[in-house]
Length: 151
Image (cartoon, rainbow, N blue to C red):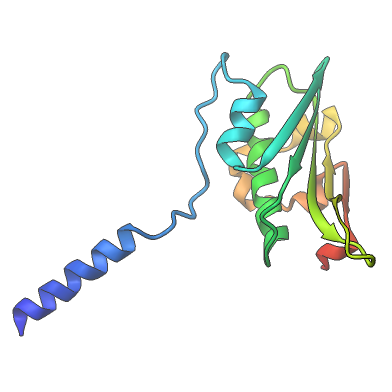
């Protein structure tokens, strides 16, 4: 009986070790880190980065749409903003999330679901050290979400 208990305990530990890690992904940011490096380490979707004079716009195409995606997009966005805050070159960042939505005629098109923008002043005054505690919807200079995301 004791051996069976230890075998069960070992199997449980092995299964839990194989589970998905939901902890925020850490990005090592230094002077050589690019915006693409930061975004690529956090999201596994196709994305583009436009950067000019400290104005950064990140467009993310999320083709793996599923339930609960708004909360994941907000978590990923907050993490990206927190990591961007470590780069001196970033002044006013924005993130736009796109996903394929089916139109009434049955065609799918990439539609903007979420748009988050920070002015230079708001971006600098935000304490990004505790980014997991931030409500990005209320602290962003501009926050807009598609009605398809719900509340």
